[in-house]
Image 1: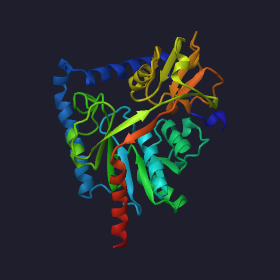
Image 2: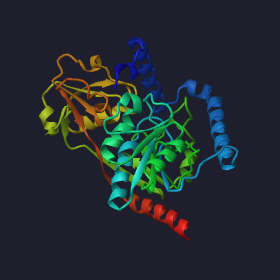
Image 3: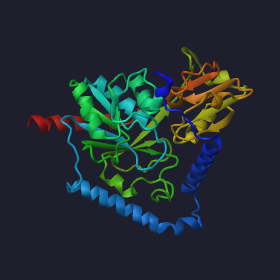
Image 4: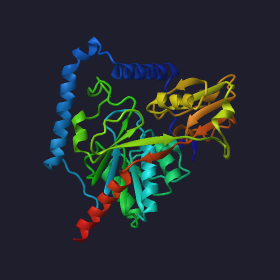
Length: 357
């Protein structure tokens, strides 16, 4: 890809650092056990945001705003809070599960962090600065068609037209994109942070009110706490080894990094989850948190005295062009989602049963 077509990060470092600090400060307020005075002062804004969300939902249900019905079933995987909850590993798990059952799934995604306009397919060798880090990771790991676009119905139509064999669509992070009708909604929840102060953005982390969970098909809790309510499923992510960024065949266990100066970098929605996972593996790390979907530059990883730099696979797809040989990647997989498989298959079979009835 010619360099002139790549999205270049020209934002001054002091602005980026200030933005990251503000983001982290907000997150601390959202998930704090104590509510500050500012929270009560801004409650009218919270009420306004709730009203706007309800009006938008009503307009779609009433047909005032158009929504498109796909000729094949659509499974939406999303969340009602901002930040990383584990949607991408679950999407990949769903694809692998469906393929094992004989289905031919495809993925549509927003392509957040990329610069492509309109809709586009994502190949395994695509530029993450064009298509986004999460779609590229899903394309690499799922071995199924992945299409991106801000307009989800347009992306789904393009996917079906290009791959007529596809018989089920998984919409990544599409819960609030009501323009694409869906046959199943799966919400992923961070089992440690849960819903914070339960207030709407920007006062809290909520994209939609908590009562939205009453109308979804499944709530998947990623680690931590569970309420045990009907329709709730537990998910556990597991990372058992690290691989060298430029030599994936070279794999080591966490013990390889003990007693070494180890640095961990994360440009994901919830860096603390990754850092805590490394500590649970027995590692003493030095943290380097970046904003979600951060476009890494060589200077970000030129850390003096670092024998090893550890990162997630989501970040790794953006660093393949760097020549450093001390970067190691921790892949994670869904180890268990008890009972969800039967629920998903039932929904798909019900869709095709209605079609043939």
